[in-house]
Image (cartoon, rainbow, N blue to C red; front, side, top):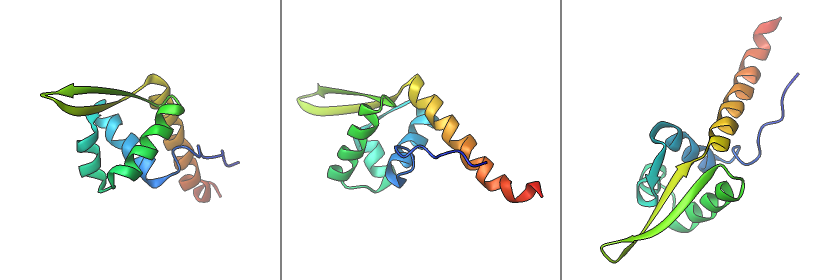
Length: 98
C-alpha cells in the first residue's frame, strides 16, 4: 500500500535543495546556503550526495577570481522529486480511502 520513500530525498536538507532547484532549475551554492540556512560544510556534503545520485549537476568555476559553484537539477532529479512527492501524497491520502 505504501511506497518506499527515496532515502536520498528523505533528508530535510537534501529535500530543501531539491525543492529550490525544482523552482529555479539552477542556483549558486551561496543562494542555496542562504535559503536553507545550512552551514557550508553540511550543504557541501548533501550536495555531493545529490550529485552522486545523479539528481543534480555541480559546476565549479571562477568569476572575478572567486570560486563559483552552481547546482542544476537533472532530468533524473526531476523524476525522482516528482515520484517522491507522489509517494508522500499517497501517504497523506491513505487514511481517506476508508
